[in-house]
Every structure is written in C-alpha cells, then in structure tokens.
Image (cartoon, rainbow, N blue to C red; front, side, top):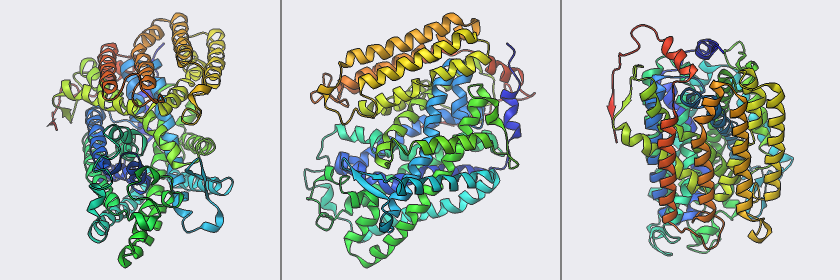
Length: 624
C-alpha cells in the first residue's frame, strides 16, 4: 500500500514561531513544576540525606537519554517527536506500543500537576475540604478536590487553545518566576535554617542503606522532575530553526535541572527542624506520612524554622504552589496534544486528531488529552500515587533514544545532522541502559501496572491501524482484538496485582508464575496471529518488535524476584539483581538495533529530501 504524503507534510500546517529560548523555557517549564515542590519530601522519606546522590544520578541518566535524542531530533525535528521515531525505525507494531505508552504519560502529567496545585491550595483553603488521608497518603477528596483539579485542567486547555505563539510568550514569563522562586528558596533555607547534623546524625548520610538511593530515583518523583526535557522535542515541528535549537535546548535544560534540584534537596534536608514538625528525629520514613507536611513540604519546613524572613517568604511558596505546577500542567497538556497528533500522523488514531483550530492547534487532540487526563483523577487521586506510574511509563518509551540513534545511523547515514553525538557506540547503549534501569528500579508494584496499561491497548492496533493499513482483514482483526482485550483484563483482575500490588498480602495472590505465564502467552499468541494474518509489511513489523516484548516481560520477571520486588526476602538480592537488569538491557538494546530497518515512512523521508540536505552533515562533536 502506498504511503500517504501526510506523514511528512502534516507538520507544515503547524505554526513555526518558537526560538531557542522559547524551546529552552518550554523544557525548563516542564522540568520545574510540582517536582521541586513535593519530590524533596518523598525522596527524603525513602533514602534520607543520601537522596542528594539520587538527584545527581537521576539527572545524569536523563542526560544520557537526552544526548541520544539530541542527535535524532536535530536530524528529524517533528511535533510529537518521541512518539514518531519508533515508527520510523521499527515499523507500525512497535511504534504503536511505545506510542501508546508515551500517550499515557502525556495525558497524565497535566493531571498530576493539577493535583499538586490542589494539594498546596488545601493549606490555605482549609474550609473547602480539598485533601484527605487514605492509607497514610494525601489524596484529593470527591467532589471538592477532584472538581477543583478538573477546573484547572480546563484552564490548561484554554491556554493551549490560543495557539503556540501565545503559549511560547506566556510561558517565558511564567518560567522566569519558576526559576527565581526555587533559587531564592535554596539561598534562604541554606543561609538561615541549615542544620548540617541532619546529614550526619540519625544513622549517618545513608541511614536506610544503599539500595534506596536507586529506588528513590524512579519512585519518589526524581526522574519525573527531569522528564520535562522532552518538551523541546515534542514542539520541534513548531520551531523556527529546529535542527540546531532543539538539541541545544534539550541538553541545556537537563544540565540546569541537575544543578537546581541537587541544591534544593540539600537545603530541604538541612532545613528540617524535627521538633517543630512533631516527627521523631531521624524518622525519615515518617516524613511522607505527615499529611500536613506532605501537602506543602517547603512551606511547612520554612514555617517550622521560625525565622521571620523564612516565614514571610513561605507565603510566596503557597503562590508558587499554584504557579509552578500550573506552568508545567499547560505545557504537558500541549505535549499530550502533540502525542495524539503524532499518533494520528502515524495512522494509529483517526485523522480527526489532525484537525486544526484557527490558531493552528490540533483541536481534537487537545480535547482528547483533556478528557483522558481528567479520567485519571478517579483511580489515582494523589500526586504521590501517580508519580511512580508516570515516571516508569515515560522512561519505558525513552529506551528508544539510543536504539533510534543507532538504527538511523544505519538506515539514514546521509541525513543532515547538525548535532552529531560523538562516541555513540558507547553513549547509545548507555542511554538505553539509563532508561532500562530506571524502569527496573521503579519496583514491581509500579512496573506491573505500566505493563498492564501499555499492552491493554493492542486491540486498538488491530481495530484501527492494521485494518486501515490493509495488514489484516476486518473479519480477523476485530475478533482478535476483542478476545485479547477480554483475556488481558481477566488476567489482571484474577491476578489482583494491578492497582493493588502494594497493598494486598502476598498470600492473597495466585502464584506469580501463573500470572506471568498467562500474560506472556497472551502477548505471544496475539503477536503471532497478527503476523500470520498480515502481508509482508505487517509480518516484517511484527518480526522487528519481539525484542520489546522480551525486554518488558524479562524486566517484569526479574522485578518480582529481585531486590525491588514484593518479596520480603528477595530471591535475587541487590546489587546482583541490578547487574542482571543490565544484562537484560544490553541484550534488548543490541537486539533492538539489529531489528531496525528502512521502514516505508523512512524511505519516504529519504526520497523526499531537498537537494543539499543529504550528505551535507555539519557534525557537532560532543561528549560528557
């Protein structure tokens, strides 16, 4: 079947008004959101003072990921970029799976930012009953808290509806505020209420051990706080000079974020006055269970210091508790919109999601992002509940950064690369491992929910993409999707792991091996039926996707028996489990690179290059 030209022509309908500074501020606006306001508390509760190392390690891992995307995005800047690269390198089957995973994160981040705003608002709007406590976690109440969050989502929608030029200019102003307040917070806390004993007393620098340093990276909001770097990639199709500005903005935002977050964590940990907070000194794990403190951590830390200047400045933090998450929320609503748009361009969703409003914004995609984001308030009405899911699902898609770079070096060696990553033979697999380890460290209870949510989408692949692409006959595609959907949901319900893995006693669960085997059989059988029912193009796409199923299920299996799983006595203890996670990652990476090929869409790009673009690389050599 001939490829429709809309794949490459679609971005021409978008506005081209974003400069380097617009892109940098979009990424920084995504990075500085609810993470700096809430993650410092949850991070301290998991790892204690040593969590400062977690911020640095997490930032460096994200930097490795970003470096890989910097080359690819400079070569092929696209709106909804990350969701479109897997389609170009491995075809429609793998592209759909990772596109859906990325879509889940794009639509949930605005929701988590709205939850953060409501959480901080509960500190001074006490009469509205916005937040309550369940199982030691602060959650939004129904109807007051959740309805207020929905109103915020509608506000994010309005800002995006007015177009990219307005959003870029408006975001520059907001991001300056978001820069200044965290910097002043660090300076004031460090200068006026810093207690160095918090880093040495109560069990020392790492009172909870070494393993929590790594688990904190994935589960407490650390990786989540850095994920905003992707904004420059997602808005690449709307940049004035994308091939140079997108890579520069991406890398600069990550480096800036590492410095800022590490300093903020130092000031937060050193600013804790245990006696004023009513918490036993050194009871790090109890910090997040204090509902009052959890609602607005930096605010209450400053108030507890009882230093007049800090108490006065704390009021600004309540204001920032609305501004910072709001600034990130509307950016991510736009990012989710472009993910919808990108999936529609790839053919995974109907063309309706490419329809523009008068401001050149994909309006149906914007509406879809709003609606699905609001739905997530119901099962996960808490920032602390949602952050691990978002982090793991997002980083699962980021595994494609290094793979895409290496595949495109083979399949499109002549494309112009304004930014060319040096030592890519080392940094590409390191970037993949950076993402794969974060996925593993997120823990079994998070990972099993991610796996369930990602693969439940496979029926949509057969019902929409496979039929429209003439890969499968409707008489096969529709029943196959329905049977898989019923079987997959039944497995998750009977297994009782999903949405309950962290709370139900192990003895109440059926055997893990049976649960795992059911999922694996369902995925393999579904994929084989798609393969057998498709023509040459569909067969090739399925063949090139087996490595992702191996990586996902292999990591899940190890996660159950490893040090980050639910077993009180792990079968494979830390750090051996992490070594095995690296082995699974390396096998998956090299298998993934070997599976890449010149897809029909990539061939279209190669055939459509303008004169002077192919073979005119201007390499920018970089490294760490």
